[in-house]
Length: 360
Image (tube, rainbow, N blue to C red):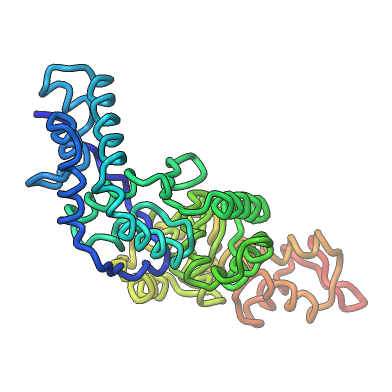
């Protein structure tokens, strides 16, 4: 059985482009254009683009194996078939149809991720295959291959596309390695990098579509943006969802509440015991009370209250009771009395004549 082309993993903008509507029938148009190519080339084009009875798109190797010819020979036949169509009367007569497609791409931002564009052009795989064929046929449409930095995408303006690529690269460089920023901030930063690009394209939907082209910039379910390598963006499991839940809450949470929040915010089932185990194992979280967890990045410190008092006194020197309580409560989520009970343990702390305390 011949190999087929594997569909890439889909990734679209925050808001997909509205389904396109055209005055022409793509089925009729593609049939007319295919008729302009020689029979053998037509068969190759049908199989390569999935334009037959099924939507399966075949590789050069698969077609070559079935026809007992080399992969290179299949490529040559395909290229000759496309050239024959481009030189035909049918192609010239289809000019208005190509103009409609170009105008649509222009209207949604000039450059669009391939999967999003094809999904907007066709409602099913067969119709998407027809539009893929039309895009390949006309040189007004330019396809950029997927790279380490960007998804595969189509555009109709090389200069604008280059400006957007460059702006995305600069935006990535400006983002911190592991921190995230709000959606409003990332859009403002992006706009600052887009000087020279037509203001007509700079609405929120288009900006997010352009951002979605980048493989190195992403967002999380809380609409925070950052490098895709950042822990808050690269969400892999309960630990990451727990991090986002606590961060959104803004203060320490009991592990049972964290599990509930994961279900509410992200529609992910999280068992209480599993959530607790994940919090214990991850250095991003610190136990600050009975079952209460905070984020290490907030400045909370691990250890029992006695350890926090000792560390505070060793770092800042002897302090009065009120100052110690204030410092410890910035590191742990505990009651004043709990701090005082530990502070009055003469095995570990000593009250000086001036009322200050020091570690023993």
